[in-house]
Image (cartoon, rainbow, N blue to C red; front, top):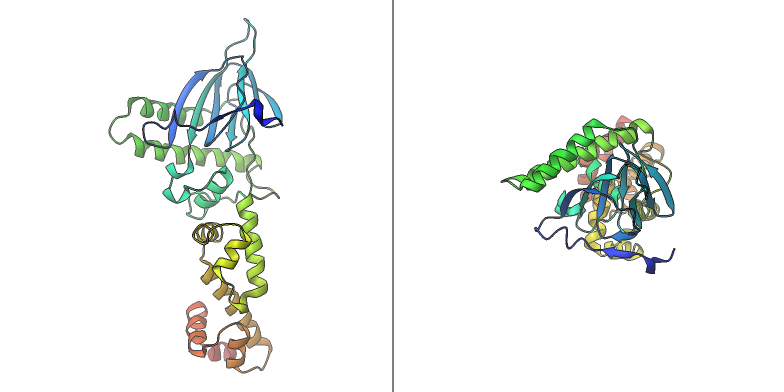
Length: 298
């Protein structure tokens, strides 16, 4: 694609009020206005007909169609250029992930947001990948009602409106993922870039858990800062790197205790513990018993 023909929308005109969210309801023009932007957009067609150009695809759209648009994805809605065609009316909710949670400040992909939220028990489904794609059709009164509430709060800006918008945005996401789950689109073989990096790191740790992999080494392999890598790892796995390595080591120690006659001190060293006291402490913390008690039980 020729990105020189697009314009970039940084969102500065949307977020001037100091919060990373913006709502509007507009009648789309038939004129071209292809663009990419530095925020996530969820657009819902309220009425009329037209087209939505999204990446390298073009969709004919009508009432009830909803689209998820990630950062840097070229797109535009257009009404049909015909006097007899009803104008395309669209609700737009644009936001940066940090509006939901400050910990998402470096996130740019809708799927990454859902991974983060899913580990906080907001969603009950796994969503390894969500395309920038049309996910509804034929109308959805519950979702349209949420947009109306959000737009009213955003327009009136009464006391507490920011907190209500945050709650409504999460409500909107939950409704969307219920629809995705029913349609079978809430998952897939593909993974986000961040998910791939963390999966590669997990594979590396499984192969090298006894060596005591260094954080800086893991982060540099992913071309991320150590701080950001730690945050991503916990978001995607629900555990810290240290906790993950400890669980790998103790799992292997359990196997050796069950299936070999090796001394406990030798097993501790084999799985990466030089201090037998520390090994015993970690083993008991994770299994509820000492290594010797575990072996006797087996």
